[in-house]
Image (cartoon, rainbow, N blue to C red; front, side):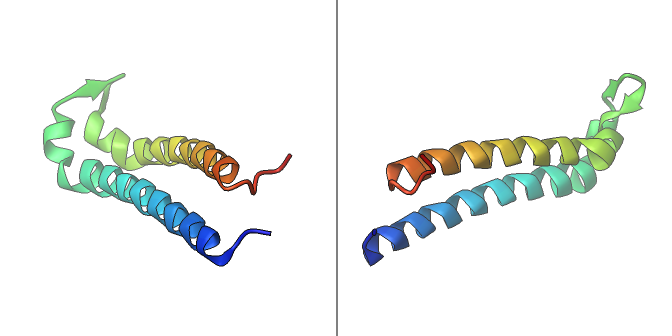
Length: 86
């Protein structure tokens, strides 16, 4: 059984990871899909404007990548605090 201060540190790091990853997702979704859509639309990929692509699909792809990053970070964190599945 882990002590209380160790578990508080675990959750503090967990929330830090969540905050950073959600901020990245927000920046990509809101920034590329809404704020910077006009400059991005000057770039075309496969015939589609890049701003449109980010608004429709890009933010979803970024979210999926961030899920895998979160899983990797949490596996490392679980090992660090010895709460991983063995």
